[in-house]
Image (cartoon, rainbow, N blue to C red; front, top):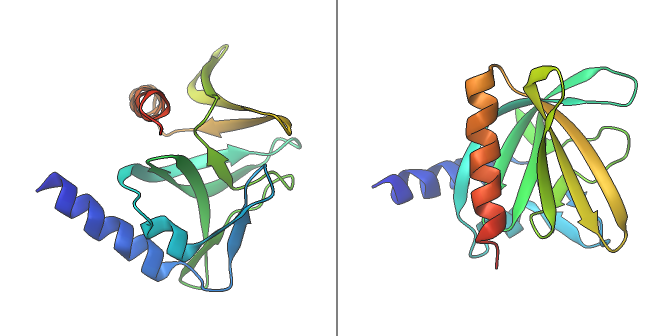
Length: 146
């Protein structure tokens, strides 16, 4: 039943995603809304804040799938791929490292160690518990990533 609910939720997110919006992966591949439903399962989704290099926080909907983490934002009642510091809003789970942020119990670093060069994301959650849930889910997804 949980799988069914998650499948339904993923379909809702995809349906609400703007057809014209797409996200680039670090390797240059483009990820579109229809890719969300290509043999991917939803592990976890929820609101996170993505911190920019200037220190501003942007509210995003983080969607953890089988092999990628999507960062979406709401715009005109639709989801579009988020853009912060021109970093890719689609993060491959391959070689993704999750770290705690020193002295900041609600934050985590996501370090994408791709051949195209590392990319670091600083994400904030609403609570320490929430951060721990996200870190555990992301790590589990990374370990079982195809």
